[in-house]
Structure formats: C-alpha cells, structure tokens
Image 1 (cartoon, rainbow, N blue to C red):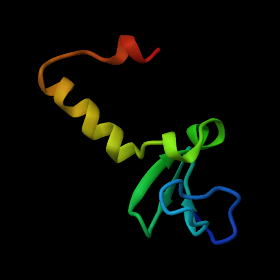
Image 2 (image 1 turned 45 degrees about the vertical axis):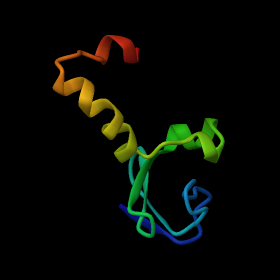
Image 3 (image 1 turned 135 degrees about the vertical axis):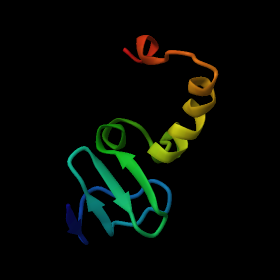
Length: 73
C-alpha cells in the first residue's frame, strides 16, 4: 500500500488527493471510503459509489438468497 500525497487519483467524495493507492482500489482516510480505480477512470465523480456503499446495496439481496454473480457479468 502506497500513501500517495500527490496522486493523480482522487477521492470522488471529498475531492481530496491524499489517498492510499492499493492494487485495484484507492482508500480515502478522510472519508474512510474505498473506491475502485477502474470506475474512477470511466465515470464522473457524482455517479461513483464507494465499495462500502455497494456492499450495503447488495447485502439485502444476499440475505434473501439471490445469486447476483450471473447478473454482474
């Protein structure tokens, strides 16, 4: 994990550039949220959900026994 203070990647939530760059994600210590790098490169900030937010959406479906993997491509 690299702490990149001048990263070209930024947090879409707080717009801060002090993020921790992981293999396929970035973590914002200010917001305490994790974002997927590939999504950051192809979507505008206002449309991006954090991994924690996505898990919150998917969790109720998993509890009900739905298998979402076939729908995720």
